[in-house]
Length: 217
Image (cartoon, rainbow, N blue to C red):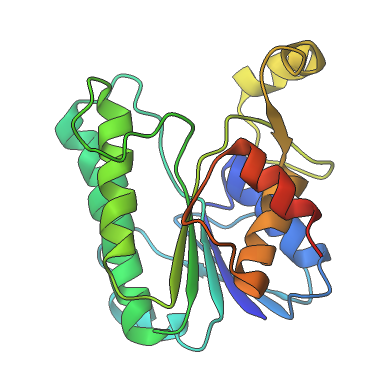
């Protein structure tokens, strides 16, 4: 497969990128982001773009791909609903629309989040916006769209793009795993690859679904 990974300068996207580079199922990876991902590999190409809503001359580079693992995103902390909608809904849907024009048979996996609100009417702002984004992506007419709703995630060896706050949390993750379901980013990357290969029956994948799919053969 040839795959696109967005958000590789963030923890989730970088973990998925590393899994793709290690996978024998993936022949080539295009990392699309606002900054270089700080990794080199024979399989890896990079496309740097300032705004996913304005792809311009780089849009033809999205042609000919089998899967897109959309991991780009921002925290809602300190953001208004309007600004978060631009960063999350408008940006993601614009990118996916361009992808549909250039690789209409692509399988798209979108990293949403645990407790995302698919009704779009709940009380939690970020959950409503994420739900709205999930729903819009599923209406685009791509070959398949899968919405990943992970919770706590453990980084993998070799990651460079971890926030300082997350590095501080690393020693307590084993304790947190006793109380909350946790995925490794290897699990998440493997499950995304399996989505493109196998096509799981559900379009929304919660933590147990992602863990199970990562082990599927």
